Length: 329
Image (tube, rainbow, N blue to C red):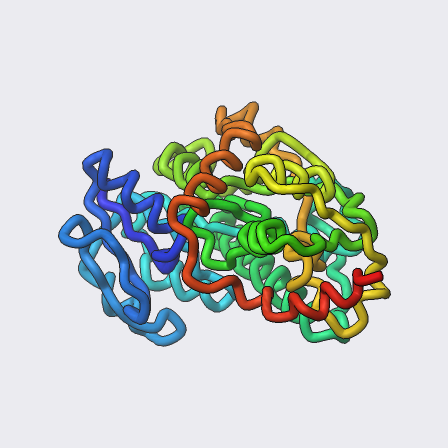
């Protein structure tokens, strides 16, 4: 296979690239060239800004069996890729998000693929909520562009919707935010008792599933949710972190209102607005896309963290002293 990967050289895209190389595929990366990759001579590289005509120029004389796009965040991004690739892509896979559901008014939780259609809510007033809304609506616009291209010209695309991704290469460092708090001996704040249900996805399993569906004509013109099977509460998930780190249990339920000016997404990264809850049953039954157990992949993530501890904590850890003051008697 000759595969083009657009963006995504930091986390899941890098895992996918290595998996494709191991299968004997020819891999080409297209990105801005601002971040290094680890592929060495195993991949070709094309650099440019997709928001210009750089992508069209870079792939003008190339034909690909498959294209995986991690960096289409708007309708214009998707339409630009469609125009640049034309009929020279055997299969185009958009890595989308569960946020396409969270911005839909009254969307059921967990969300199924049939729940996509419906009115979109108005943009929230706060900065973080607005950013989440823009992300979700932008991805919806990208998906809609692909649906239009499939209807009009049978452009062969698949939309893969994933929730918050965890893994050893997660550059957003969300799980790691909890690890540092668990290990520093202080309280671990769980807003409102962490009653919300969480259903995430393991980055390596996403890469495995993408590789599995490349070229699968059953998926053309379709959207699929993909995530883990388990649905723990946030309280229980943090408890699993504590158990694997061998630490004392210092979880503390704190009302969100008591956090004051502390950014919720920094104190408890998995409590942030916009966290989706997906139903993966269609991908499991129709495409046989499985996912390893939550306990298994948490073992791997925690082991990697302890073996290669980061030099500095995540940015959200900067408010740690204020968190201690909130919980102090």
